[in-house]
Length: 136
Image 1 (cartoon, rainbow, N blue to C red):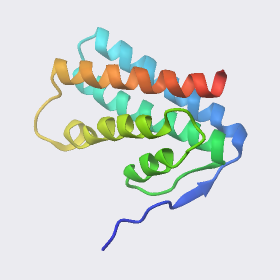
Image 2 (image 1 turned 60 degrees about the horizontal axis):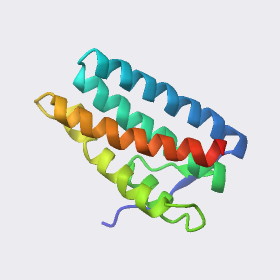
Image 3 (image 1 turned 180 degrees about the vertical axis):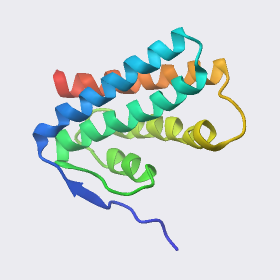
Image 4 (image 1 turned 120 degrees about the vertical axis):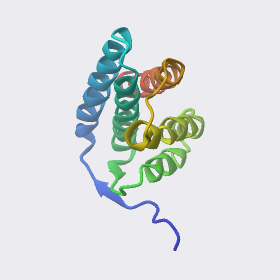
């Protein structure tokens, strides 16, 4: 059975600020966790930051966000924003971040310091891109 794509929910454009605020809060939690050496928390906050930042961009430009439980659908939607600078490239970054979600939440090993650092770096770039798009 093929994966469902583009199942969306209509969201008023003004809510983009709310999603961006969530992304920034997750980003700050990610940084605090990194300073404390809590690598699993870095990873999970990175994933949530990226998802919220993606939602902010989608809502801002399309007044929609993914309603699919598979977050890959959100990356697909992001990649389809042809008028948004670097959307395709950033969708690939989001996919890389999301790829680590299973490890962080379900595998029977902890996130390593180097994995957390790589996720934090990708997430910082992704979140900065979203903020620049929405805040100018």
